[in-house]
Image (cartoon, rainbow, N blue to C red; front, side):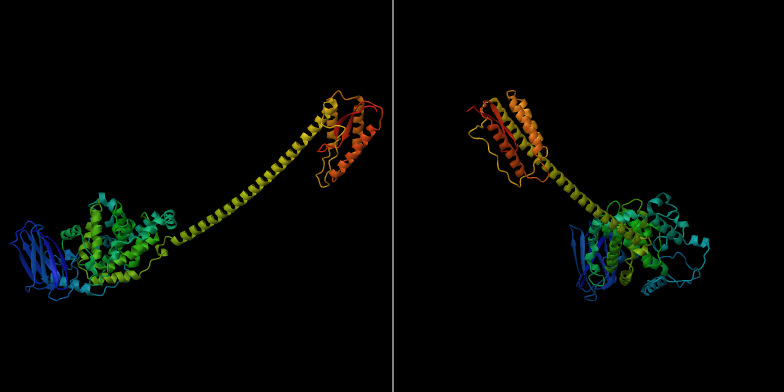
Length: 613
């Protein structure tokens, strides 16, 4: 017989069943409805369900068949109108058990009487589940156990029910888990080796880089996974809001329905390992923003101590510390905020109920199924969790969510000195900022000094240029005076005649001082001008020499003297010379007169023509 694909939904009055039976005859449908039992037969399909609520056959039921789609739809009335059937999405749990509902325990007391049959075991299991679950650590007096007994108890897998698996899979061992020889290693040894491996793998540089350069991580923290839109499972429509894809439904139908006989310790460890796996899954979904990649199988198993080290935990705090340490040691994004975000996501998943947890486990199952050799972890843990979670009570899932929500995790709990590293890095960053500010201030001062030097050099250049311009202004006057002298001596009409003799130019008393070397320079210029003209008479030469001696004796330029005084002195000397030359009567010769320059040269040679009266 073939188990057909099916789906269930409900409203306040009816249970709606959709059964896909292609290539079957419409006249060969058989239905059986009795309380919580439902049976359907259409050759070659057979379906038997155990429903979470009671249904009745009172004439209101209605069935339709779509030949094109091969879809059989059935509406069956509920026995109690308005009753809400829980767990209709948990398809595996609805399938009737195959054979006995009990699972043979790993250790069985052969002295037990025959009254302990399968039914009694089932009732005992249900009674254990109804007991109030204690999430606190159960303390017991330490008892020394021999090594042989310890090696005989080295189990792993879901509920610590497996052993010897990796003894047959030595080639795949290194690609799946980090521990070597798990059968020969106790739980305490696994934990110690795990802690050592985490301490060795921790990179302070990587952690600090993600801590202070976290722009990309802040974007991941804003991501909202699909479960954030769900309502809490305490709401009657909470779990009903979770929908499964066709592939997920097909996978649920492939699971074999089985029951698990777990003692109190094994159940406690199963719940804690489930939290550990969900934390790793939540981190992976957030780090990839819901898009799985080739690294997803590695990330999930690497962050979970259960999957990577076959770890068994004793408390929720141990689970959180293990996950937190691994989250800052191995993945790409090593940020403590990612740890706290994964914790919040896991609480939300558990609050959303069994259906949400099952959907997450099916996603993990698919990721591992498509990766070789991670599929081994499906056989060890995930498949059993997918079947087991459908059979547990919803109130236990909610109780676990409430307890996990109250547990806090801090950086110091990880024992990796994260706070000390961050403080040291902060101090170093502050010192670097101070040094940069000092360097910037020094550079600013250097620029100001360099600008001041450049302005000073420009001022010096400007003063040199002004002095050069002053000298340029002086040279043309001397050349002009010499030209005039030359013209007079040559008799060629120098532009100044006897009828209009040049007059001394009035000078301002506040004019600039005359340089000390000016008289000698001017007299030398006069001598050179006279030597340049051989037509000058001997008497004129003697007069020039005499004038040179008198000028050298009379003209004294001292510091602080005014150009006005020097101009008056030069004028008086020139007038005296003129009077002397004019006082000689009856001489017909060429005479040379000296007079103050109207410009800068104090003396000019003026040639005049005189005749005897």
